[in-house]
Amino acid sequence: MVFAGGAAEKGALVKVCWRIRAAGAAVLAILVLLAAAGGKAAAEPLAAEAFPVPVLLKPNVEFWTAVFTRYSTRDFVVHDRSDLRRVYQVLHLPGSGTPSRDEAARVSDYLKDKYRHLFLGMAAGGLAPDYEQRRVAALFGGGSPVTYLLAADNLRVQQGLREPFKRSLLLGRYYRPAMERILRANGLPPQLTALVAVESGFIANARSKAGAVGLWQFTAGTGRQYLRISRYFDERLDPLRSTEAAAELLRENYELFHSWPLAITAYNYGSNGTARAARACNNDFERMLMVYDGRSFGFAVKNYYAEFLAALTVQRDAEKFFPGVSREAAPPPPPVTVALHPRPRLSYAAYRTGARPMAGQVRRRAGSAKRRQRGRTPHRLIDRRHHGHRGRHRRA
Image (tube, rainbow, N blue to C red; front, side):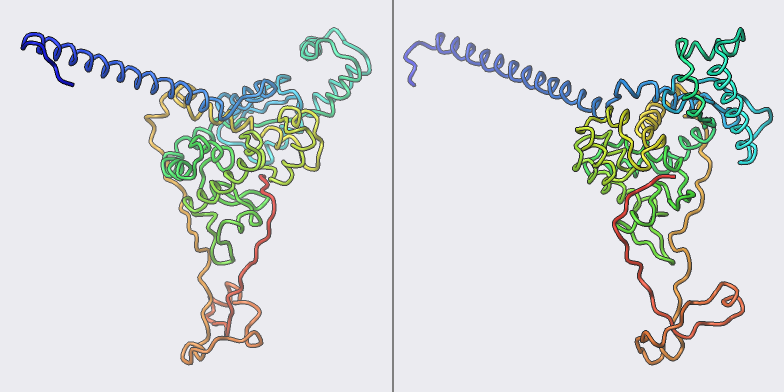
């Protein structure tokens, strides 16, 4: 384009063009900021909804939050196992320190017997003019005799976990940063580290009665799908390798269910069992908790996601629940070794000749610890590999 005007007109036009260009840049910058703000606003609800809190589970989450933060290990809460809003009594055991298993069992039996007799009496004779019976009856809104009979069979006692959970917050400092990096690298929310607080309390060498081991509490059957586990080596005790395995399992669960409530429940109950329960309830998580009555689908499974949400709540705002915890020194983590026993060695003759031992030349075992202490070396051994099978992950 050729401009035919004078110098003054040409200069004025140049100024106008620069103003238009500057205004366009400003508009573009505003649009970019708005787009970024819109993107952030769109991302925040997704992050908030990643772990939804179903209305049905809100009382359960509040209950477990209290168990983790309010009640000590010397507090015993007797409650209805189906409706955690019905807390009948919190008994504090006098003394100090964590009660022994025998002490905890005696307190639990006492509370169950006390309220079983109370409910049976209320069912048989109606409401007597007694303060405790009136207080308990108010929790049911003046229930019928059948209601009290059902309540007598639905009693449960939960020991407080304030001290162990606080310890898990402190121990988590050693592991959570690396765990969160591994989870992010696998495209998973880093908040899933709250599962470790529920599973093992961040005790790296934790072992359950069911045989689950490590921070993520893998059983041998499930662990062998992702980790090396043998008589001599157990990667479940490796914090990094077990986290990588847990990330793989959790990712598989989420890809199967497309729902974190179901995926996290499957971590406890197993993917096959959770899939059956979800199909029976049209993938409705709340309905599944209310009506499904499958094998081993009991209190622990129904409350597993609620426990995770409670642990996540405390983990996000630890200072609120444990004032001063951020300034406390973390206790040293327990020593952990992945190599459980030294591998057996071949005989001296096999070592010299380099011969590979044949099956018929192999001893049955490496020998007991006593034989090794006496200096007896097994003649020939073979490294027997354990072949895993696909099994469901179960928590103690």
